Image (cartoon, rainbow, N blue to C red; front, side, top):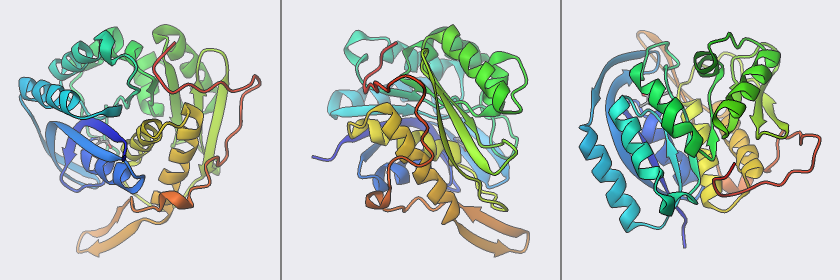
Length: 290
Ligand code: PXL
């Protein structure tokens, strides 16, 4: 039976990010994708034109209906947009009956274009209610900086930020180094007892968006399939690296548009690219804990 996973995310009409990236990623990896839509973003790569919220109670109904009807094996959140929707997701996932469904929180705040996507009042609700429910939170360097109130510019600052966030919220954090200088994109996983590193070579000269959405969706897909967290992250890292490397490209009168290629054969993933286990033995867990 195909595993089922749910994404709670915004719609990106250009389909590189948001729920469209999640839908394509889950499908490529062999997971049936359910989508609860939080907002509709009118955008193309490099430019966000408008965002319109879906009524918060409609978002609640979508999620409750899906959870009551399908055997959901993992959940990922992307752009939740408003404080009301973050509250609703917390209301739902605080219920003890749902505590063993893996919950991946991608704390989407800012688009690759630099446009602000998340209403600022929502950040406080993430901090007070949502992070502590997560199996894994996946901030990039800018989001880690916003959440810690300190600059995150290099691998040492990623380490400091990750340790601080893990200790403050008690959840596992994967701080993503997609904007590091150097020749590898290094991500660090903090689980409270050790730090594990996942890396892949940088691909130069490609301006795609949606890599964060794709990465967290691929992690959620791996958990829905029963992989332990470290394996799910390693496979997801390889998936997103291949999606960038094998990207699509079109030219128009304004220049070049690049888009991730989500159609990566799951069977061709090796599983542990650039994976560097921490000092102590890895005891990966599938369900939410800590
Ligand atoms: O890449 C972040 C992101 C997430 N979700 C939606 C988006 C974007 C970026 O543009 O539109 C819906």
